[in-house]
Image 1 (cartoon, rainbow, N blue to C red):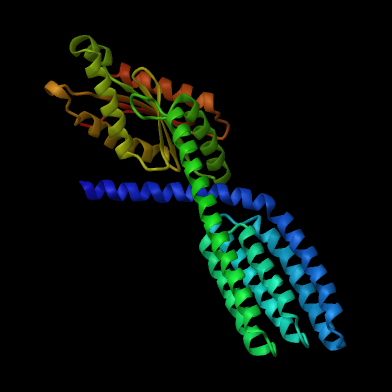
Image 2: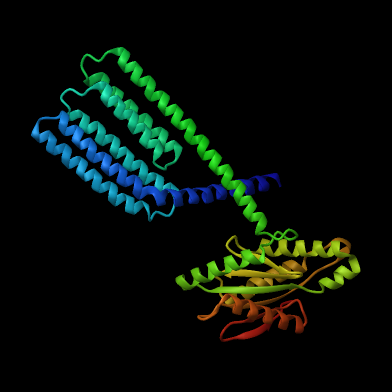
Length: 375
């Protein structure tokens, strides 16, 4: 039992991480074109510095071509980054671009006749800072900054003549300090943002859930319904609405008390939820009524699904041997259906099921209707 709860907790944690990264992706994509523009301008300014320090025309031409191509690549990839669907994909592309920028820095450094160690050390510190400013996963930031620093200081040690050991150690110290401070700051900011997002999500979920049954509220139902109706229409997929009513709940309340009635509602909601997919929605409409949204489910499959749901509800045994049943009305979305019409049609089908004897599934689409009851 504990294993099942642990697995569910891991899945919920993973889902929460995915949702959090989705918000990070939205924020990153809104600003990436600005960062790409700044990077392109900076790349051009660095070209002016290169031309100031390098006199040989061939090397100047090589550096100009490299920096020009990199600026074009930045602009093209910024457009690509705005269309990426996941933060992991976004991070991968950003990491590749930053790795190319580091490689460009080291490649151009090779063309300098006598690079100034302190000036170039400031460049590597600036590179580390930029790596941590651009939205990315902190693990990628840390890895890139370490790789850039190690590569630069190895180059400086072997290629810059008469390099004073004190200057090398001082530059290494400042680079390590910056990496540590930036990493700690980034991890702290990421955790704080994740905790704030989790708290906000819990608040939103609490306001979108019925307190008694943990089903969605009417407001959340309408949001989900309109979202799925739009999606299924765009993709050419079927969609079904279901109205479910707990039979004779008033009799249970009158005979056994409202506490038993509340228990019946909770058990019915939990039982129906256990038979549905994660993409399905169950909402409490009010009193003893629930509404289900079944995206990418045809009317025929919805009737079969509700038959299983009906049998599962019938198998529920409350205290004192009390049993419950439900009547269901299901309709499939038509070309011109809207939210209110779907609800009204499903509600009408449910009342027909109750009039036909309760504990039944009544269905309808634009072309067919009927009453279904299995023993």
